[in-house]
Length: 163
Image (tube, rainbow, N blue to C red; front, side, top):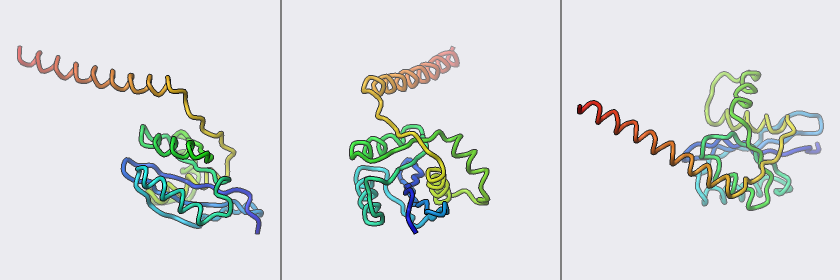
């Protein structure tokens, strides 16, 4: 049976990527056919792309889909984009709402990656575009400011307690 679409669903965590590969077949059935865990670092990203290339016919046509998970998804997204691979980043509430529509009883990293893959197969997702460098710098400065403000509050509270 002919494949219409292939998706790699990635559940991103701080230290690992839990990955499921799925395909949408001609009769519109979904086949989730492979699962693996990789480290969330450059070596793990390379292993992921090599593993996917071994399992699919046309690796450049595979669509990688992941949730926006704070900062943890950013390195893999940049890596895939640098290698001219299709990437979509989905808001967590969309995946969460979709998850509730399925009859999945247990929530594990594996089931999350399967749901993300299925979501990518069933939806027409926009491709992620790398933000301009100025936005990345602004994001970093904003995070640093938030951290300094939080530390300032702690010091103020300590001074108040001393008085």
